[in-house]
Image (cartoon, rainbow, N blue to C red):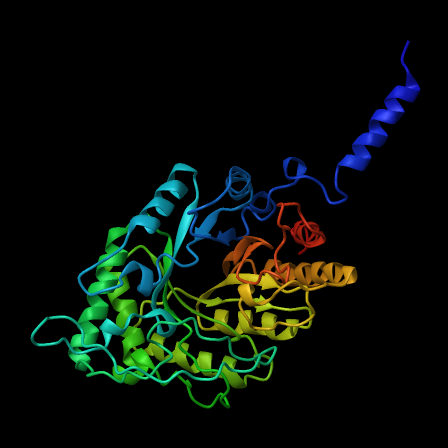
Length: 401
């Protein structure tokens, strides 16, 4: 005879043990929800992932972007030395597990080693050391929609050592691109060729390129040349320009968005083999969603594909712009997680409306504790890889039209 009380007790226990928003083995996979629409990706170098993280990656994502290991500083620390250990291992792991790889990034002012720009010492053959600079007072916390702090490297500092000629600098960049792209030819889907070239601020009447590193030492045509070299190294790779806050001002075509349109039009006119533009998507609870959608439409009107390349939505109320390690332990109101879910849902509904031009949507990290915004709980999974309300919202948006 069936013991109905025992059965009832069993199901009550299960209901208590299983979290309200489900466990990983009962989730619908993100990549399956958006199959046939656009790729779903995550960012990580895959150097120290747990078994649970590996399983989560294989379940939910189509494509992985290296968060750091392919940037110029770590992969090419000196002119005659490349470090492919981490990037090789990452590409191999992805290939074995059926994931695509997106290369990030070939040139970036913030992590370009100083040797790219410095004249060699005639006696040693080494790049001359720059003159030491006095320490500066740390900047105040940035505006919620303003610039992100620099990440070190040569780019945000003046080149105070002897500067190499334009021809030497360009030859070094060409060698870098040909070597890195050539090594992964056929193994990497595409590349962010130039990253974050447009300065913050500006009235949108010019390209407003940064006044440091590549653009100061070489000139604006360096971006076009980089695209041409990347295409030469791997003609089948997709090639993107990638930047943050470039959606801001899209509705009125002002500010950084207007500058990005001018830059992209010039690249196209100069024959740069550009495939698309990456909107990074470091957003917050009050992000202007009309600007996001209009930016996608504006870039598509140029004949370009669009990707959301570094997506996160902070649950702390605003986009502090600061890096995760500096966030500390914040108390986040419980209702913010529902607000975060609503923003994620609206974003993915926008992406679905423009699935014909969107190539991929990549989350910048694996979980709230494996994110550059630790303390802001900006991703779909908590530190134990439990799906948050935002996860369910993203899955729900996949059925929208």
